[in-house]
Length: 511
Image 1 (cartoon, rainbow, N blue to C red):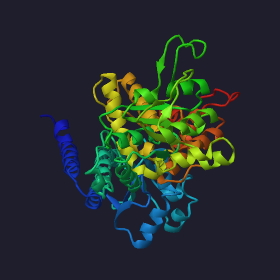
Image 2: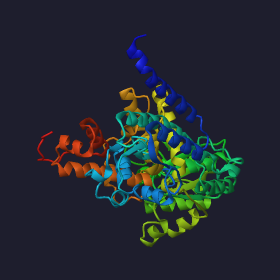
Image 3: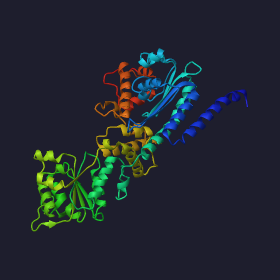
Image 4: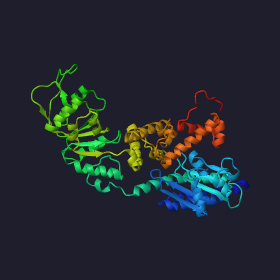
């Protein structure tokens, strides 16, 4: 073995020791001790004088864990204040390491009150999670003086890379170990494929258990995409009619004649094109359950005929004469609109509303059950891979965090579509995971100004704003903006793609 190899031994031993200790960290089961040990390791390997580490839950911004090393209470307060502005804010916004030999002499940070007041010198700040950071490590000053070295930075970034999946697992375990509000009611219901454990979902399931054995008409309300059809199916499979058919008809934008034919059937010659008799859904659903979604869109004529059936159990196919026909069918109706307002506007019959509104169950929006998003997304991802006949893929921690923070006006349906599209893009790239960029390709994360300010939603908007401001300040010169942001041009192009930032028409291509 030559001298060069002998010289390399101490460095190799340090790298080996670092990986062994990171491996030990991966066995952690509790968040607080995991953060303390992670920070202790980073302080040791970088020779930092002060340190701070923080981890946040994307669903509940108030759920925050942290640990500090050699920082007073005042020091911790000052560090935490820079989560929203300052060195840490820049690290979180860019998802990139920030390193400076002297913060008080660095043009990027010298004017910050915390830097001026404390005369902060060397700083090394590393995000936990690159796509959408879930935490941060802040290291300040070195015991031996001087700046943090490239080796210090490399060790810290290596540790962060290994820490991210462990942190994500611990956060997920924390949520899983929290009380499942649906546990007691699940014991008494068939819930095939139904995902949800939040308190608002538990309330819905209690209502399902209450109405399932009844033959009463049920009105299911809720925004578009919340899962009203799935709820109607749960009522059906948990009732006495479970062995009989479950059929559904969405009346949204359906022509009156078509709706009547679908519901009641028609006889040959009832109208142009009716060249044979047709059974309607009432006949096809005999003994079972019929779900009529978007009932508020039905015409007044269809409403009148539906009311007759609900009152008497009798109906007449379109164009038929003779006696009325009978059907034993339970009707569940769904609506995304306020039917009482529709009655006031003359668009809906008040007597039909009274007949439908015996028992009402409201499906909550996805914003009301954010704790269910991770499990829903994972379920959709698995199903999409299975449908494509491809090897299973998982959603990356960054993709899951972004989904939890996103404002999904289309609710569960929009979440499903985003995940399926993300799976297809990841498969096309032969990627090992479904990443943030696959799920949110081309979406301008920073443009949702009216969205609630959750921690990660605000973080995404902040990241987009910093990138946009740098590009505008440089006249959309990518090379100049990349230098100002202290990132590579390739990474800046990736950020522009992630946030949907495109060079304005007329801007010079001078990069």
